[in-house]
Image (tube, rainbow, N blue to C red; front, side, top):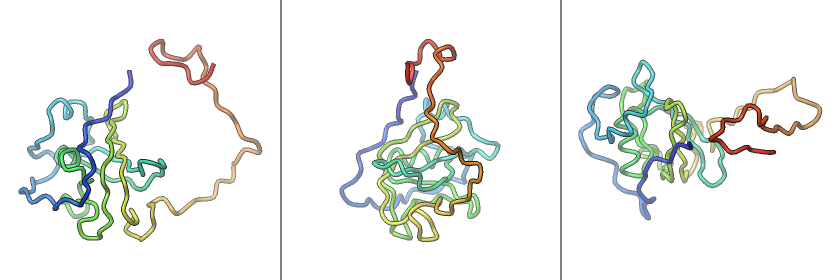
Length: 167
């Protein structure tokens, strides 16, 4: 059964104010996150879940960040991407200081509950280096195949409740 997107408010027409609520102490602190959503998360030992961020219309991967329950709660309720900074040990709303906002279109939880896919409308660069994506540094792959390979699903290994990709 596919995992449904988590509910997110409609993207704002104008940027909302940065949340001014008192900041909890970070991972493990009390959160306003819906308990049904919180129960589905598999957090690391640090209380965080990986958030892969992509541009909603192109699918371009922009960055990877981390969320705890409160950061996810703020993201879902404000429509603005909010993360936990592991180095500064505080919450940050993407674009609050740089102006490079991320307006959240959808949030999906992976099948294991240990990663989030955050689809956004990115304003300006996503990376602190000024690049659109944090993945601008391409590494050489020397083992490239000489010809393209078309992957096909093996019906013998398909789960009965999962539709086949190709037949």
